[in-house]
Amino acid sequence: MKISFLECTRCGEHLPADHPQTICPKDGGVLFVHYDLGSLRGKLRREDLSGRVASMWRYAEVLPDAAPVTLGEGFTPMLPSREFANVLIKDEGLNPTGSFKARGMSAAVTMARHYGLKKLAAPSAGNAGGALAAYAAAAGIEAHIFMPKDVPLANRMECDFHGARVTLVDGLISDCARMVGERKEKEGWFDVSTLKEPFRVEGKKTMGYEIAEQLEWELPQGIIYPTGGGVGMIGMWKAFDEMEELGWIGSERPKMITVQAAGCAPIVKAWEAGKSSSEMWSGAHTLAAGLRVPKAYGDYLILEILKKSGGTAVAATDEEILAATRHWASVEGIFAAPEGAASLVAYQKLRASGFFSAEDKVVLFNTGTAYKYLDVLEAQQKKEQLAAPATRNIGGIIGPF
Ligand SMILES: Cc1ncc(COP(=O)(O)O)c(C=O)c1O
Ligand SMILES: [Zn+2]
Image 1: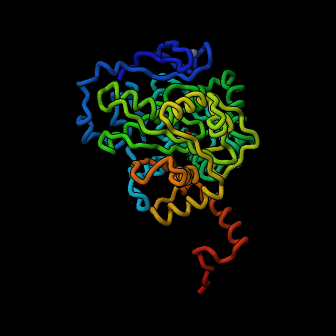
Image 2 (image 1 turned 120 degrees about the horizontal axis):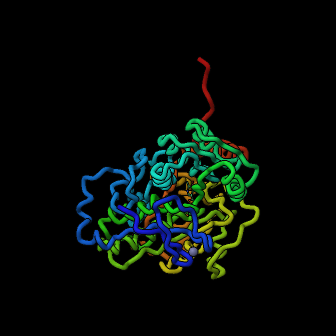
Image 3 (image 1 turned 45 degrees about the vertical axis):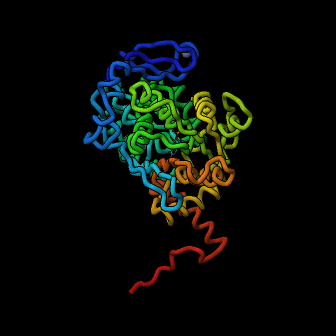
């Protein structure tokens, strides 16, 4: 649908969307897209969605009015857990490029092409870079990606094969972001960093629409979301408000739960201290590469959502994450990215503490597929085998015959 205006989430300033915008020029606030949803109320009904394309573009009326750059992202399965009666696993590993980053990049690249932009740049913890590379390739646009040098192998390979220009950085995503910031003007790059343009949120918000549609318009009691930059959480919360405006749901909201890696948990720390913004986490380390975000640009939005929703923030150690990855794979048949498996750790903790009961319906996000982390998992497996030989299922090689 036609965009009415962009609005700053800090000061409320309105900006036009007829040309590319980044952040609020006054205070650097994140910009949200606004549509005239009131005019759709009663006209666009929930039933109208049935039979539409099985991708996030089925919600076209609440997405920008531009020809989509699509690879079939979204409308991923909502799988009932085999282990817990009221748990559902939203499996984002089935997206193009193997993670939920596809949604945000499909929307951002769609608008980049719409505006006639020719060169995009982004810092990435790994999967966002891969997704940008793929969508930029599909749109015939240049992608310049800055990633930590130790990202999973799959992320480097996909960016290379999709034809992106990759710079590997001896540092973290925050260092990569600084480099994009320093060079973008001179190079003529448009910066599609997390929350520094308004459309990745638009793509990721479709997860909120899908949860509602797939649960027959009754939102769950909780949603557990592995949080780095937090775009998915911010997007889903926006989607709930939009659906209420459309008359599709009421005022009820799920408790929104952030899970982070214990080795990089700035939102958990800020939440526990009752703060409304986070501090840069020093010495960030975790094998869940996507959660290695020492300072989220939209931290104030994430913390506000946790508060408003009655949610909370939980940290998971790498050991817990690895055990959960193996557990989900062997119990659910889902080979999850470590970031996704962190959702299971959070759920287990929140059940043990009584935050959730067995009756609460809770959606756990698996944000990506483990196939993108084979090198990370193999390195871990080797360590485990050295510590305790022959504890795993793979025997020796037999032959040659
Ligand atoms: C698999 C996976 N899960 C979760 C995240 C965190 O996502 P967000 O930055 O939107 O919070 C990332 C980010 O790279 C990721 O790749
Ligand atoms: Zn502002």
